[in-house]
Amino acid sequence: MTTRHYHINLFWSAEDKAWIADVPDLKSCSAHGASPAQALAEVEKAMVAWIEVAREEGHAIPPPRYRPAIYATRA
Image (cartoon, rainbow, N blue to C red):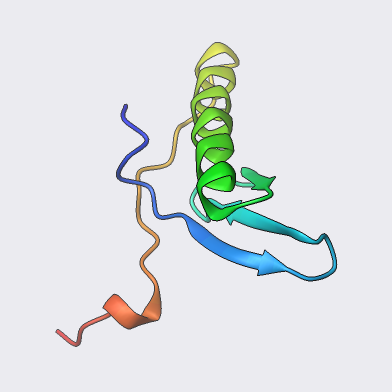
């Protein structure tokens, strides 16, 4: 499974004084960095590790489903 289809929320955290990258479909999968690019690079590693561990432990890997409200359309 490729990680490129998972949505990543990227935002600045004043509290952490870092950029945060969070993957809503993968519970507790996030990373941080000093720049947006660094946070994204780190969350890519975290996603690969998350999926690897889930496979090793026999857990289901959720399909990419999350879409921000900006992309929601009415049926």
